[in-house]
Image 1 (tube, rainbow, N blue to C red):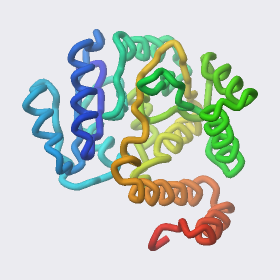
Image 2 (cartoon, rainbow, N blue to C red):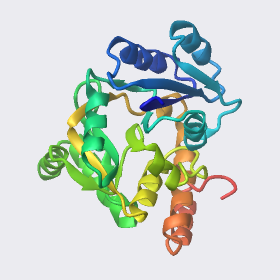
Image 3 (cartoon, rainbow, N blue to C red):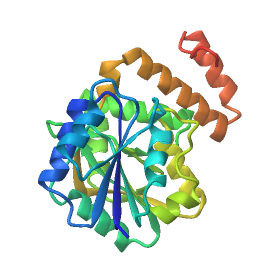
Length: 274
């Protein structure tokens, strides 16, 4: 049985997908692995290029734009490896990064999920872990993100300090997330109610509810060209984010759900049909 399956969901991200697959082919993990690309009915030729240039990569045609969670689950169910790496098409794993993630997970029997330090193409830190999503946690996360981006002294220093320390966290980003298959299946895989955004936080919450831990490790660094989907279709991405946010609060914070709906309606951001 293959030790590791790398599941990459792609939707109209041909250039990013080519760069990601090229990086994996040039400096492949030494861990026995297979790569599965789930193509969400892209119209840019992504699937064809992946098949032509990387014949060892399995390409699954989703048949429609299923969103991230459903497409990821499709890739997981089509394989049978011990470990699963969820990897965004807009990431560039460095040499040895995936192997070090595998070593870290295997060395921690109490841990179900491990995520690396994410940086952009210029080496700037992405805040890729945090506390369980809630109104106050979201507000604090936004303060940290904006404070770090604007180099507000105390906030920027706090973010950098936290990101240099290996720690248990409530969630790590699904852009690069390693999990044991047995535990992913015990969690029911990703909740398909989340089309895009929030599924990683929800998945980690489910695993923590089963008594397992989530680990962030700065010892592994992966480049994440974040925000490409927002750049290609900002209105669609914004609507998807709000739908996932509502789904998350309906599931995890039902008392706050009506408050969130009113807040979004007042601000003119409530998605149609919600």
